[in-house]
Length: 152
Image (cartoon, rainbow, N blue to C red; front, side, top):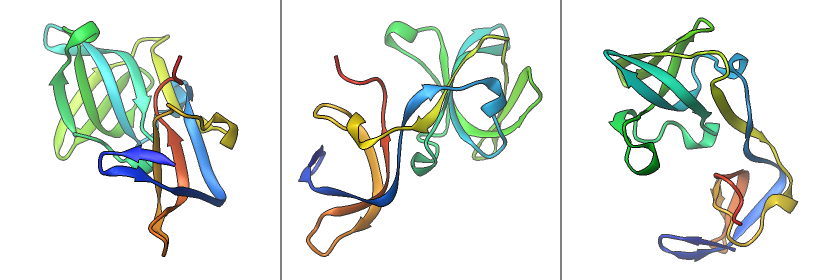
């Protein structure tokens, strides 16, 4: 059972469903076509990556574009887009035709979806479940992505 913005919903995790959570990646995971969210520090006319989050395939690229961040990340920019190319030090991104180039220094944090198990699903865990509606109104999930860090 999950809580949605329209109320509680039953989710049936189908046999063979993909279950993933966010885990540690590396710059070698930055491949063309992947959707990413890059937290970057502006430096004159350039942007240097602080962290790069590879979005789950089912999520696509939420709110494509580049935006100033607030709160603890105030002063940084968030760039949500698709990887066009990565040469090991420069990331070229495409957000619906708008291109962004971001420097990626060694040691930049990369987060990516990694395999998880049903045991990782617990009350308070945010999930993105994708599937088809069942006859009883439930969601027959083909994939479940655990979003963010587990609750404390």
